Image (cartoon, rainbow, N blue to C red; front, side, top):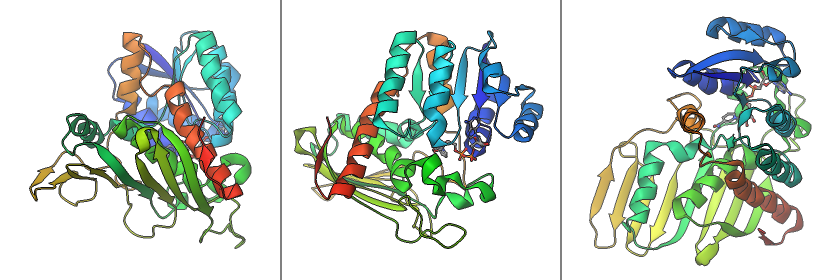
Length: 343
Ligand SMILES: NC(=O)c1ccc[n+]([C@@H]2O[C@H](COP(=O)([O-])OP(=O)(O)OC[C@H]3O[C@@H](n4cnc5c(N)ncnc54)[C@H](O)[C@@H]3O)[C@@H](O)[C@H]2O)c1
């Protein structure tokens, strides 16, 4: 039985990490911690865990082998680094951290301590995305030439556990807006689907519509448009928005030499392939998780499998670092008005 701890007991912990751990036959949620002790106590009661009064108390528990880090973005580094140094394997939520230096340091600490570091890029794990990758690898649409991928909804304010404490809109705690909140998922996904790294980024970040409670325009972006140039010359767009005031858009289209693959574009079929000879193949696989329709993400099963089998996670810190480099490059591109190379 693997003993785990959960640090940060807000919405993502309550909708994903805690229930998915509780669902796993080989996991016991030993302890939880949150800055809001009442919240930690409530969660501890639900899951039969111990509520810790400090993060140090949780990390000092020798029985705990691994932790989920589900705190606000600006604390990902501090908490993950302390956990790995205390000997715990870490599953940290996305975005990995808020500066490039912090992301690189997390990878370094993972290597130095020999602790696994996995980042919550759960989009890779949907059955549809896994099948799409397989179909691309089998050459179903030929060589991928270009793409467009997007993730947008009406903003985190409808998702938050505590609407009065919206850290997503506070630059000091979130650092980025829609770009890193939603865009990092698709940035990771497009590298996964194409098997190529992003090499150059041209981007425009905006705050189109969101304001704080006082009516002041946010100082984080609520909309991002990025042009990604990949290795081998594949070019495409990645857009992310908290300004899609309707149904969530979580779609990706890959344009290949032999046809087009539409992923999560069609109501009934999660993959539709249109070949250049006019034929059409439809796959009904799953529906994507949305803020209002939570299905099992698979992230905990994938994480626990690594712990049980003692193998490095596929979505490792090093892997997530490459997506984060594109995110930092997008931010720089928007600031400078230049195309930025991803090193
Ligand atoms: N993978 C995904 O699809 C996905 C979806 C939503 C959120 N997230 C990520 O999960 C993280 C948490 O988001 P959320 O929506 O659950 O937010 P939330 O505000 O609902 O929960 C965060 C919790 O962490 C606590 N907290 C903050 N800083 C802390 C610290 N230093 N130590 C202990 N507790 C602390 C808060 O009190 C709160 O209870 C964010 O990084 C977010 O980007 C990922």
